[in-house]
Picture 1 (spheres, helix red, strand yellow):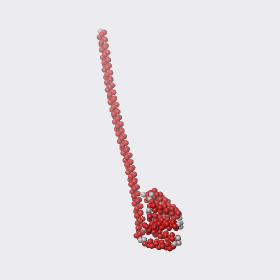
Picture 2 (cartoon, rainbow, N blue to C red):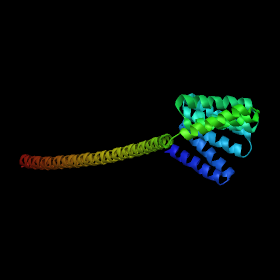
Picture 3 (cartoon, rainbow, N blue to C red):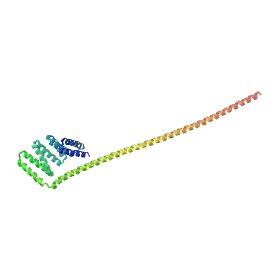
Picture 4 (cartoon, rainbow, N blue to C red):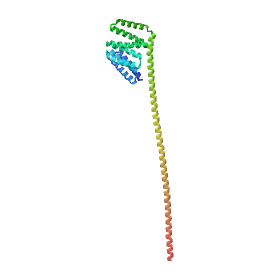
Length: 277
């Protein structure tokens, strides 16, 4: 998903560059580069450095152009993307010609031509022949310049529409590959979102279960406390009943003691009266 944004920024930079809005184009390339460096998309990083370099070339900042192009070329060489490497070397050749460093220009275009011959990059080979022609013309070597001029036209005439279609197909394949990559990244994001939603749902269920457990515990505690309270009341009532029985028995005993005492007194009085009489 982020790579898709980076590609869009690169495309927007190309639009600004065509409109001669170079500051805006440079800003978009830099924003794209930040995204690609975060996602570690090597080929996209290299392509962005090529864009930044050629932009500097249009502004006449050829040393900056060469610096950016060399960064891109090193990346393409490390990851062995040979068509991008050959294309970057073509841009580098043009930059060296602009500062009249014909030796470095010759080194760059020769490597690009070798790659084109090895892997069959005919369209890049055409550019190599044009730059070889330009180099020999600058050196005053018109014989070799004419040689590469002829080679350019021979190969240009021999490239059939089928070969050109193959080059287009390569671009289409790359487009489909990038599209598939974006779809996979989008699917991955959706899966991650589903995982997050599932995790949140699990957390909510756990919280709900904990709340239910707490409610159940509270209810059980209330039932237990109510039972204890009832038992305590019943126990108090039993104690009260026993106390009342004891009080009743004590009262009855006290009455009997009084009756016995009165009976003794009466008997004593009767005995004394008998003796006197």
